[in-house]
Image 1: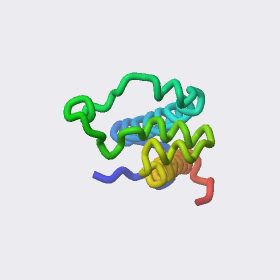
Image 2: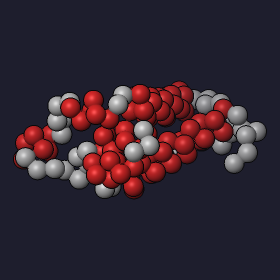
Image 3: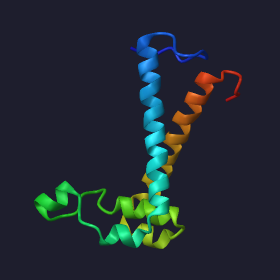
Image 4: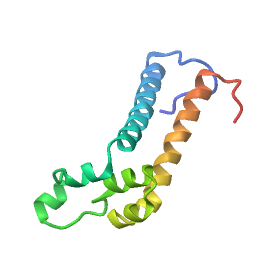
Length: 116
């Protein structure tokens, strides 16, 4: 069922729950980026390997190194980011784009006068 997010404050219980979930996801995404921007990448590189795939099978999954790659991008070290995981050139812009799009939708939901 598609929620009506046409320009007024969520009216029904379902709309309010959906809005709160979306807002929570946006805040969590922003918090994740801020955390990666604060923590130095070398600290992350020294940490334990959390990838279930790598721990079970001993080979890298397609997203192994992505946390360190995101951190490197946020610290401005694009060469290291590409070295950690080449897919960062796709995933980082997509992640940020989706985060910004959802944040803009939430703002427009609460403030319909904000232009697209």
